Image 1 (cartoon, helix red, strand yellow):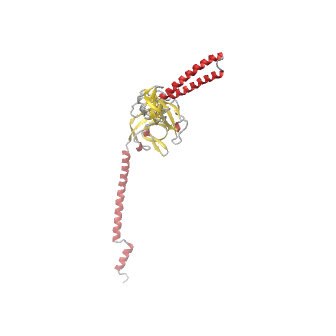
Image 2 (tube, one colour; image 1 turned 60 degrees about the vertical axis):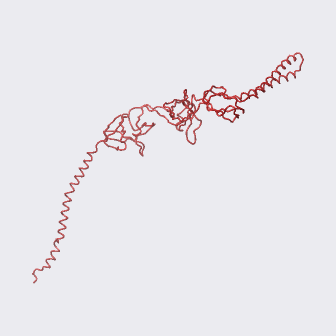
Length: 372
């Protein structure tokens, strides 16, 4: 019959217009998950906010040390290396060859200018001198007799002139021999100290033979060089100081000469200074640490070198403003071993941070532990 119920039709109608049990279960599970997530999100958000708030609360001020900029006097210096040299120095040699007959100095001793140091055998020359002196005396006597006879007409003018000329020749020959005798005597050309001798008595020496050295070391010279950029600022008359190894004292000297040109290889100018050395404790050849004072700057802003941070833009320091670190770009002037002059970027009474520099950033809260 047409109005009878059809089970198959009922099932089709249910599939088309409703949800299957499996689908309903999946939908229910999805709703539950969404509810759980929705409840959890506010807690996570609150937790994150709490952590952020807690982090800001824990950002305690960084403890730092600082200095207050005040007017200072800064001395500009150059430090360089130098070598000590004798004020005068010479290698003593003979002017003529011969055998050494006597040595008149002590090794390492002091001698006066003109003192006889070494005598070379001059026996033959002394004999020649005596012969010439005898001949000169005879010629002189003959010239005197002929002069009287010339007035009386006893000799001619030509004979008299020949005798006078003979006397003059003998005088010249005698002077030559005396000069050769003097060359056998080796004397000190100036006051100083002799070194170790290289010859002994009885040795045959020539002009090429080194006998000893003679040096004057009071005053003593210091030879040093400075970069070409300072050539106009280091002049004769300028004061220098230097130290040498093994002596716990600073010696003061004065520049007396500068070379005429700058070394093309090193781009440096060589200078020399003199310093008193009365005790003769400074010796030629010693290494010297030389300091040249170029001048002083008054009312300078001076900071420890480690307070300045190099950046791509130049140099930077951090100052304290309202309890926070703030960067300042600065321009620098002269430097020393531990300090640097700031020529621009800071004012007097600024508070500059000198510790924990690498940890600082703009706006970082800071607390000053030590203020100098």
